[in-house]
Length: 104
Ligand code: FES
Picture 1 (tube, rainbow, N blue to C red):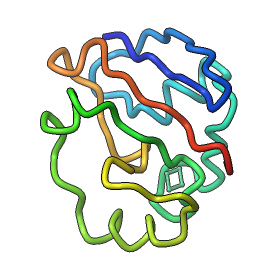
Picture 2 (picture 1 turned 135 degrees about the vertical axis):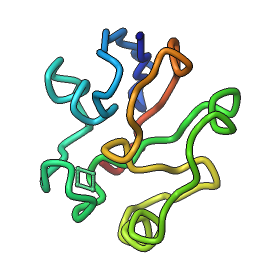
Picture 3 (picture 1 turned 120 degrees about the vertical axis):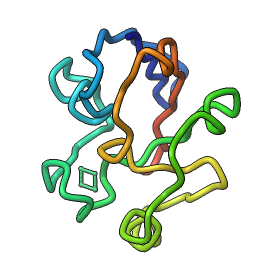
């Protein structure tokens, strides 16, 4: 499944991810800048913060409490903010668009 990452300067990168891979893992494997993922996906660092395109937001599972509380530490949080290590790719999410906050 494909993921499109847009950085804050407007550059978009296309990444191929196997179902079951998190968006964060796909970003790290493909050296997408602005996704640091310091904690390695343990939902403990908030440096994998992304904004999810509205068209896909509704297809994602709800945030759990841990993600919600960790997002409090991220900068520039919006309604469509998510932690990309908590989003697992599936065929249904093929073509998902996310963008990365400037502060990251
Ligand atoms: Fe650390 Fe997602 S990688 S919270």
